[in-house]
Length: 160
Image 1: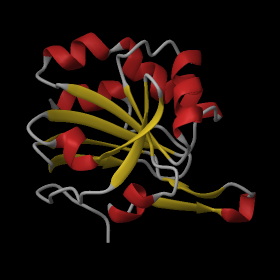
Image 2: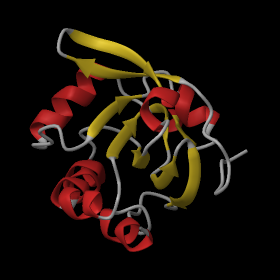
Image 3: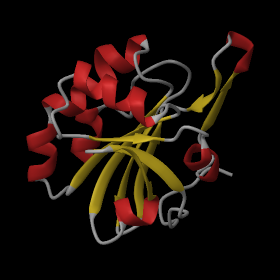
Image 4: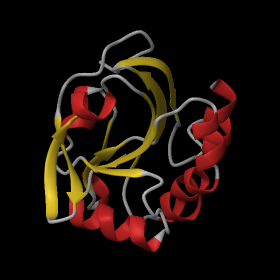
């Protein structure tokens, strides 16, 4: 079942790159006591994700945070090494928290998995964005297919 506005995020372990290498954290640690705009996507270094989805949040980072968002987080079913390398290649420079959902535990827990095994890509995340206030979802936009129509930075800024 897909999470919806009003639902509390499940507490799931995810990865981030720390100063000494990959670190494990939890969604409670990321979302508790703060307003977070989190967006999920099928994969680092994939065409739409690299050309439009992540770059939009990098470009609009200051404007989004000016609207009361404490953290912008990007979640993908990749490991912390890949998320870190992708962030560096996209000039994230600490503006976006790059969250590794390597085993798709978070994506499965919120009901936003995308099965691309027939295309040789395994289980991935659907393309979405949500606004979370102290672990509670206030808005969720999920794109259909490979399109980037409702989870982009501009659309989400209008909801803040």
